Image (cartoon, rainbow, N blue to C red; front, side, top):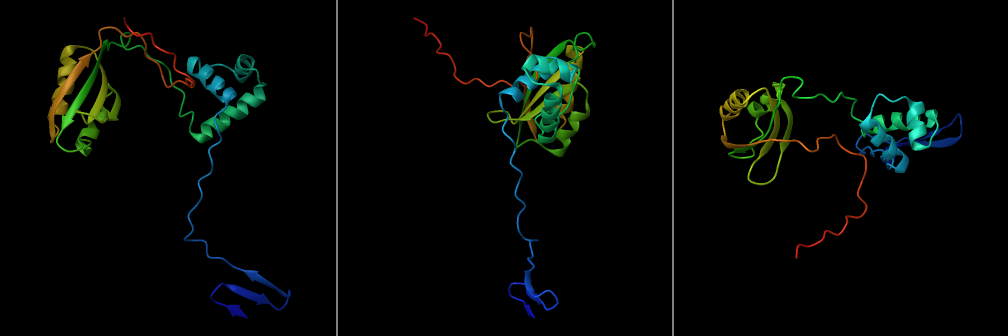
Length: 193
């Protein structure tokens, strides 16, 4: 006997009710991301410094066994905390010593399909949609000021771009990937007298 309102039916052979549920319209619950603990942060920091380390060496550095480190690295990859492993390249050694940050001002939001095509150029290292007086920020590394000028010509050819401001780095004191550490308490800064 079937009750259409709740999808129950009676099995005469087995003598019990079985409820069938239609769950197609229920939302999937997102799996809770496991919290990144102190050991995870130590592993991530060690990998950021040198990703070619063995699990045994990482284990010695963070105080865990190699299998425990392997399992944590596997979990960190699955969660997306580790997006990939990359070689740190030197721009000057590759013939691209000029580092510039280009702020793009555009009518509207600015992140158009045409502007996104600029990402195909290997000189573009980063692109960010930003708040403030610019709508997009590029990190660009070129061989010369003339190559930066050619890049800017590509930007200015995009419909809707109203202007750019470029900041050329004279010296770089720190350039590093995302860091695993978190500052728990910011130190008090002395005030000028």
